[in-house]
Length: 361
Length: 258
Image (cartoon, rainbow over all chains, first blue to last red; front, side, top):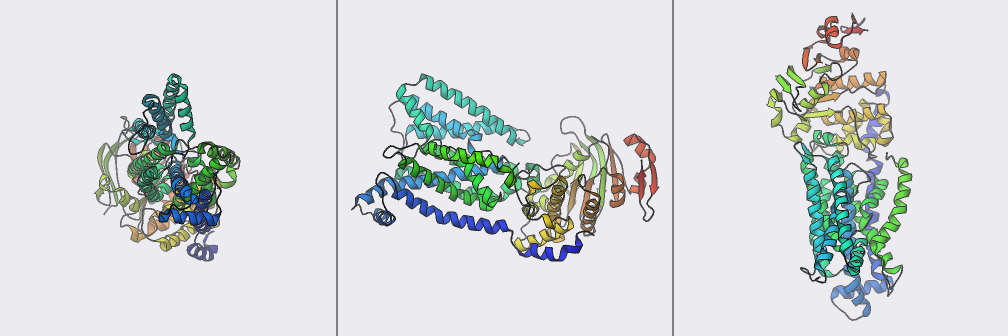
């Protein structure tokens, strides 16, 4: 027999040593976990008023302790802390839902907007801006625009999912095509609305589209945390089904995965997570696409480390992007969606050109 | 008791009948070769056996229970399926792909890594184990996928009923790897695993199967030992070819000479 001659040694080493990727994944997650507080600190310290590390930390302590003695404590406590935490939360959710969507569609170039949630939210927001006019009070501190975006996003996903359903289950390929069709439809209805809108409305629509975290406050942060924490807790539990589904849907079924239930739950979690993020921060490009890509490049496609690592990396990336957006042209502020796209596109193109080096087809 | 039993099973997934009145039984430890011309229904029968489609008439039982009563996870512990082609395009390492075969079991990491070592060896993929699956050749990919389904059924204590379904497992393999893989299938069968495999190589089927079933436009010839099923008349009727049947010089199985 060909194999048995060298079997003794290799069996022992294969059985005892963990795979090199597992060790690497652990190191990457630890590094990201260490990086996140640093990004948070950088974000708290920089802005129109620059604060040093020690200053930021003492101001943060004062803000948490409830003292509003210094100007720094007010800036950090009232403005920068809720914004930074919201950025971290939104970034984490966008990245992890992106990773889950790529696994679900078995396509490393997929992102959550494929199932229509972003386009639907955009349409919902435009509708709200055009029809509500000057009425912007909303509910629980939420503008009508945010609510419109959230509802629009969820309705679109429901429509896409419904279109992809047939007697024999839900076809992922059909869902992709339905997502494209519904996205196009939402886009053209949106254009029609813009055609009707006044100049002031047009400007608000286009600003909203670019995305931004400038509306951050504790009320929004609380809502975001209430919705996003369950999403962040739930998605990593689908790591093993997602791992099996990368082989193919029927293969996953033969490995004991209830594929249709997994698909449905994933779509719901992704829609709720992304819908909330878009409602709170507008459309933020490329985080859901690029972050999972980068992380997969470092630790491979195993979703058990991939999903938590994406949460951390997405949080870091959006914190940095938002810091850049606030400081690049200070005191003016760039929409964060513009920064993520400006940084993300060149990076993504370079990934595309080198994809064969890491085994992507 | 038979591990797998089909009693006049018909299959008509889109109205037209693809399989008509198929009946056979398979006991633990038996290897059944599934043969037939293109479009005869071999893959349809395999899809039926793995629960992807259900019979429109007749009864299909696995381990003495109707197939539809098996829960999905429980069936995955009892049954592994190698499809003809794989569409995996994420850069898993070879080890990660094989370990996916342990998904339905909760046997623990150290046990899984032992099984990984054994299946790497059984498919001659030890040296590939840290390579990326997407960068392998067709034959190497096929061996890795085989190792994955072997890993799923490797331990006798994981399930009382074990059925391995292979759709053209050797289509991309060279001669020595064909023998290696067939011997590994034989070893699994000796430990009580039943095997159904679609094969196109008649001499491979004659040598490595206990029983052969020939499908012909929805109907069946056999099952029987290769010696009983492989007759010039059967080949004339089913495949529309003239062949001579000889004997292997050293062992008791037929040779098909075209």
